Amino acid sequence: MKWKLFLVLTPFFTGCVMEHNAYRVADVTLRDSQPCISVNHDPTLNDGDAKLLTLSLFVRNAKGQMQEVWKQDNFDSPTYTVQADQCIPVKYQFKDDDEYSVTVITAQPKDKISTKRLWSRNFRINDLASE
Image (cartoon, rainbow, N blue to C red; front, side):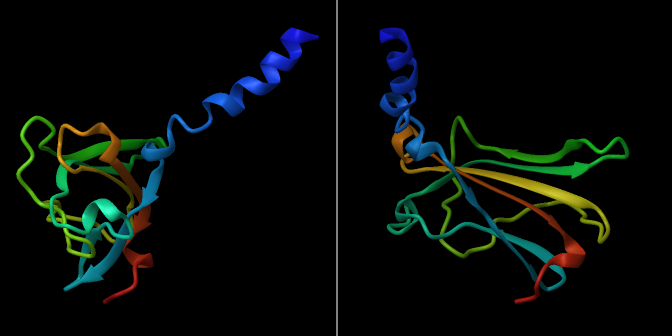
């Protein structure tokens, strides 16, 4: 009986461990016929010190799997400052009919794990709203 109670209660004791690492939804809109990838609604972005650690872009391939096609990796020495609602530059030639997924990782400062944020979003160019 004690083991059953222990097994039932264990998730409640450990439930808050990943609180700060939950995925947030990235914003993706069209600006000048190009996708604008941005992040917002998080207190780590408010004082202008949040740095871009990684931005990864994936496209669905012919087998139905997401494949990485572009990456900006500044994890070891981030220099790009992320502002809320500001487009993060992506140097990739998007196609209208492809399905994309983007993942953005930010932190403030880079060595403080508790401020690390993960943003993600799936999108198609044809489905995006223009700004």
